[in-house]
Length: 125
Image (cartoon, rainbow, N blue to C red):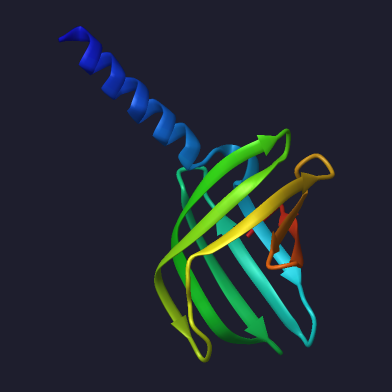
């Protein structure tokens, strides 16, 4: 009886630990091409939200959950799963990004499909 209980607790602990941690948590901002910017809030509990603006007009808002897998110190994979969204165009899908933290956790680089977005941590939001 004790072995199945310990196995279940270990599995729960491993799956929770792989969900998210505080390393990527925070308020992030990226300036992209053509007057597009993204504000993203990432919580250590596995929740996230983002707002995409083009020329200061909101064109997409999303929120959902994410999973984090570490590959090395300050790097790994993030899988963003949207649960709620509003979008003026385009399809909203689960996104898998390679992440790299730089400058003592003040810069977050997300790479997906060969494109990299560079986010800077915002102190206050």
